[in-house]
Length: 356
Image (cartoon, rainbow, N blue to C red; front, side, top):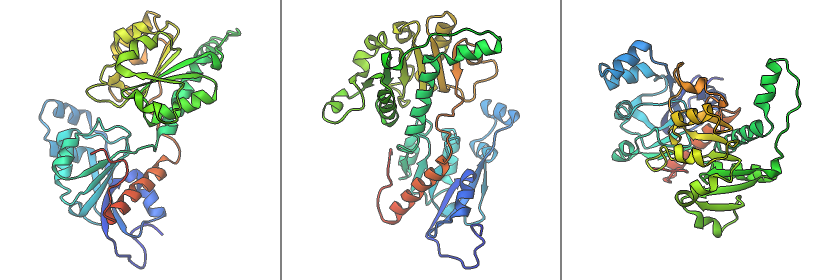
């Protein structure tokens, strides 16, 4: 029976605000101590976008444009926990408007792995805790990176091109155990990818800000080097360079012309982190000149890129359309993590994966 229509009402202790994408999950198995308000993310009209860029659309108006909130089972003034789904992006001023409407908010669960889209100081000023998704999508994102490695190593784009041209020719590909994969960023995703690559015989080199920590624990990498000290030097040895870094002031545009020039001409760059980590204009130039073997981008700097973006027409550049974390069952798992955090609040504990 749908949530909110039970013949016997159960007393609730918390009101939460969650994406309408999770509404079906709540209705299938309504948590006994939680009642939910739902928001629906709406694409802005071209006119509203233009007015906002011109500074003619106030933040509270933009909030109403972007979010449709259903208050059937409570009011925003009662909300103590907020689940931000991964597609939701609100500019800091607009997010502040939302936070101002949630005076009892204690905790935010951000389904995204990174927090570059959030101005964490706004939450800290209000005494609101923020958690990210932890290892929720580490495996699927690592699998997407592995799929890109296999796609390039086995020359699948060339096979697809030949098929379209109705041309038959056997193509020589790479043996996986001969390949060297440099993984820039040794967090959860990087570690998962290293394990997957090692299982298939590839040699993995991790680049970390703190390589010494891998000397005192079991490491999924064959070798771990310093990110700043060894990045350019190790790139010349790589058949694949995979970026799994969080986006912050230190990592923005960390992969630019010098790093690309250091790579082999047949090597492939795979970015399953945020687009601004890479100088995308320079990447397009390198690929157009045949100086790199290929590039795979999951989350470009502008999401989605405008129709005139060179990302769409640059040879050997493949977009995976922000799909790395979009797998069956991820919303159910995210709901489980969100409800664990709510239970932690009830018990006076700090929810897991807190970042602020």
